[in-house]
Image (cartoon, rainbow, N blue to C red; front, side, top):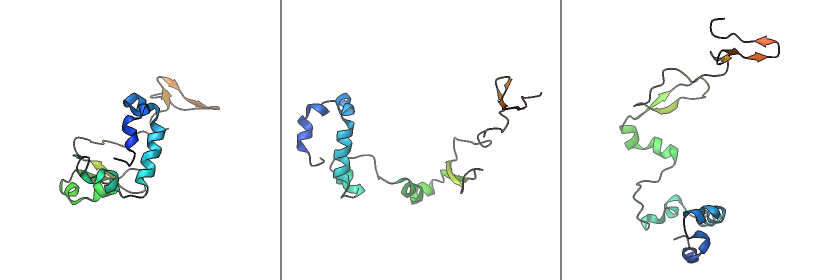
Length: 125
């Protein structure tokens, strides 16, 4: 499949554990095989009976007319992001941004956090 018929009988790749132990070798073989080709060639032009459907890059998926027609992703503004982030509308809901340090989390349990001589307030104290 990758121009290396000897791989099938190579004892280094006899099972998943062995392939994992020699993963760097397999990665090098795959990189060399994929380098001159296109994404379509790398997934075997369908010869491998790939049933996963289209093989798209992330942005291609987001731009796909079928994905957009589902109205599945909504643009959400986030305080630290330079632009809105496409986020699943259902069943995910974001009631508020995630906490940032110092945003209501000045304590470890009931123990105030100290920075040098500065003591941060803890809850109601």
